[in-house]
Length: 295
Image (cartoon, rainbow, N blue to C red):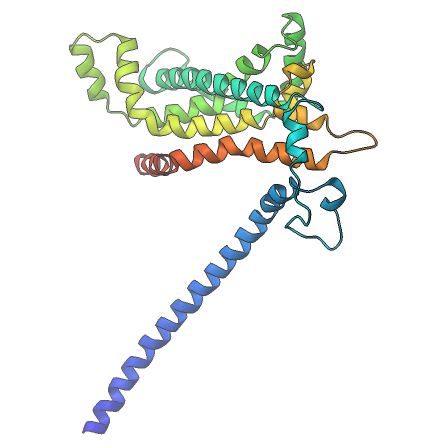
């Protein structure tokens, strides 16, 4: 009797052990794949940092080494002293353009999204379809007409040619519309009863209840503007007006490429992005989750 009971308990325990081992193996495989992905993604970034402390001759030395054998700060010194390019000025130019474009995009996108979400007017569906249709056109299609427009209004080598066209975002307007649809209309009716104006309702109800979407959109717009290269290259003419991506591209010459300075400039350009992520990562992730729950 005792032997039969022991055999039965062992048979019941065996499936449980196999399930536990299967779970452990599955988790180990997942963590291994994540580790490999992290290494593949992080290795170029690490090499960018370490390469910025190397001489040009050491960057492509064989065998390839991540750590510099003879560390140097000459790349940063030459980059920041302005002897090759006015990098500090170009860095501040990029910051000004990115911040201005982000703020203006948030204002325009939130107002357009609020109008589509909370107001009924003739031709609303047609306009919304036209708005969505513009998302299918790549920027290269509108590049030549937009450039000709900038020439006619004499906006070449002017930051307005970058900020204003970039602030009109069909994606941002549709994104804010989807978020603002979730705002209860009862709140708007109560505000109307209390005598609030349309602008007051938008400013005191619409925007505060859409902070999650606004923060996500702000990060996306800032990143896009901060790293934009093609359009600033076309409309900007003078070195002092260049943004940092265009300025770093001038270090690529016909007979010589300053790889060390380019890596140093690229690393310095990633610092604002890292700071934004470190400071606002919790709020950003919570807002993304909140927006997903609201649907």
